Image (tube, rainbow over all chains, first blue to last red; front, side, top):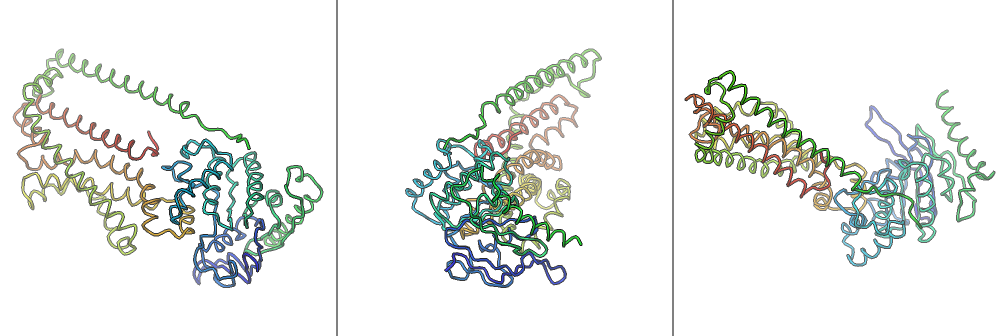
Length: 257
Length: 268
């Protein structure tokens, strides 16, 4: 049984007059502990797909199973990281990380211990009493990663989490994320518009094309783990990159004609 | 792992603005003193009659002379201001919450409120005198009216300013409405509410004075009206000084409370 089973999924917005098909006939099976990246230009529906998996929006049509069961409402088995850290300015780093546990009513003592563990894991040990405004963008995004992991969900959904960061911080956080993932395996679905990032992180890259959003190609990434930055300059990496680029640009050319 | 990211040292950022604030305060005080001295000098030089424009020394003299009256009238105006302001807070914040949570109110009451906002509230003061007489109550109502709208509007916009992605995060955790309100919405709205409160408190003193102008037997507004009509201009100026001081002190009192309650609010 796949962790997430998507079959014939459609999502449309708007009314009868102005209807926009965000997703058309999406079929995707995501296995337990798999790292999947969704890549494509804006408007390809990758963020919409993530929202559907989080049950923050309902599909118009099609099958979406989570652990074999139909997804009707948000499940607590999911952690989310957004492009913006959206931390609560009035809470310290530690209290920001603890927010989900308060909402879910988890045990305070054990939650606190786990929060400290996570804060140390992402290299923010010593900053737990700091407020978000005292942290750099990269540090804030680390806090939001801790917040997504605090209730130990089996699925981590990431919506262009590093897109707002500078290139160096972005790279650093990519490797950090892989390190955390290899230590504590989860099913990760990671949305990005950066092809190199998509390949570097993923077990499988799902390349999507816009208008209407659909899956153009799924590329298995057969690179050894732990991944290193040198891999980006290998021939294999270039082949993957070309495969993905070709489907994305092909569809854009088709759209123009 | 060694974190290569840096923390912004708070000291570096705050010392400079503080220094410039101090400089601004010193500069303003010095200028004020200079202007008062110039006023004194000119009114002596040209022998401007006191009933027209009294010299600062004369104003000070009459303030000392009439200090017990001035204090008595100040207390009345302060009372009207604070009660009206407090009433506005007590009613407009819950109303804003109701508007945000009720689509019905959003589509019925709220547009009317927004339209009423452009009505000059002080213009109702004579009508209030007609309806509820010349006591303290009509003044409190005027203060309430001028404070009410800025607080409602600020609170409503604050409660709806939670970033969409944060709302998604909260929904993904299946948070209850109460949890969302207490943990996210209300704290997010707090800095906005204080913006409204600071606007309201400056309006509040104006409202009280207008109310007193329309018909009253006490309060600083009444004192200005009476002493002007009796050509006791220095006393009118004395009342004006107290009104200004009251207004400034009240504004900074609200700003001070804001710094304690909402330390994360942006400062200027």
